[in-house]
Image (cartoon, rainbow, N blue to C red):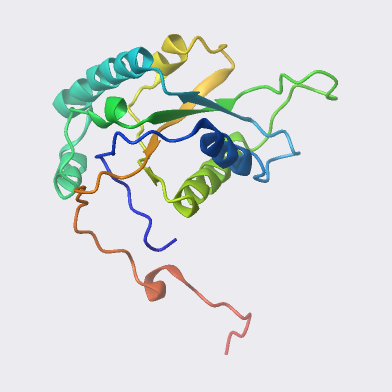
Length: 197
């Protein structure tokens, strides 16, 4: 898992639908508030839909880089080398759009209420990324903001809200990733035994 990296260049080698379904099934085993499972994973391999999604994302990203992002945010992004161009949204064999569900739409449940939606969907996305990594696939967590265009393009009901857009596929053999450092264990781990001496 420590080798997992976000990438922005994908191979055009196809990825079998059964593998994508298996990865999504794994994500679906995540814990959730009151077991409401408030997530929907929409998998897209259609080139026309991917093109439309890219166009919608790039429109939002142009506004982001031009006027929505603050100076500090843009400065931090320079280290990664991103801009408003998102060719990976067409190049990746699959796009997985994760929606958070603001109501439980299953029949026969006691209520349509959902709880801890962001936390639950966040855990499911983490499991999705881990499952893809274990399968040898590469991913990118992409969050163009706002993301309402995804619900419109994919014709999702109002109570499904876009949460994340994840290109998925085999990495391009020549892909490169930014030279980043991860925080050390000492920076992220605190052992608290309750011993206050």
